[in-house]
Length: 134
Image (tube, rainbow, N blue to C red; front, top):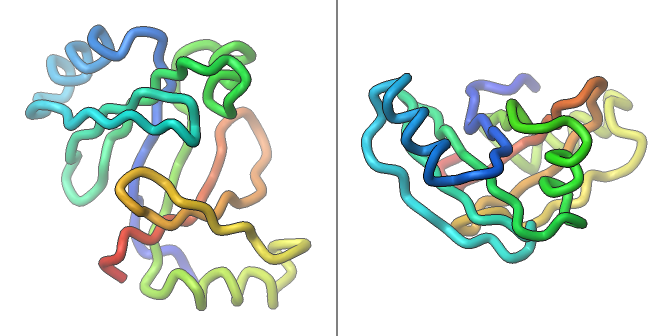
């Protein structure tokens, strides 16, 4: 089973207001929706970018995943999240093809998105997201 779309792109930032202004100017985006996401220790802003979301993550908890990423890599691209036609079947298929060594832990993201972090190489993360539209 293949991923069918880019669900969202995350950039980790130090200053959420400045980042929102920068991306609005550079990409011609409308206003960002702001969300406090305590489970990831971050303030988040998101805006539609075509069929995908652009998500800016400003960690306030230095020990959170985004906080550690910011400390290690600085500001910039943080995460690519893909969607598929069937989230649960996609995860089962990854396990069956041994793309995953163990079943992926599914956690709650912003706005009740279901998230499964996937293994990847390099500095950015990869995940599968189900926002309820699948």
